[in-house]
Image (cartoon, rainbow, N blue to C red):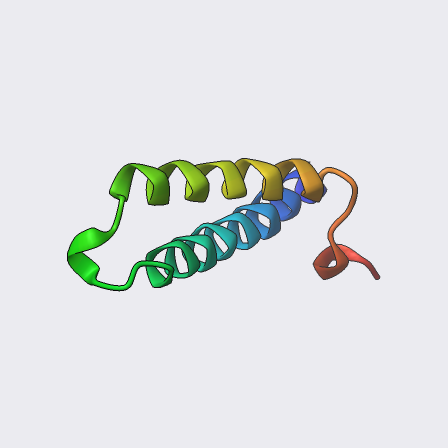
Length: 65
């Protein structure tokens, strides 16, 4: 059970970082802040977080060793 908790923590941290990076990148593509399509930002960020979690199933370098 200890490994499961460590995996959840590491995968969660990685997913949150990925969501934040995706949001920043998506917002940055707008020329003006008022032109940001917030639905697209949220949608792309959530998708990136889900993909990050699924990728983490293959393994997390943070937990190796």
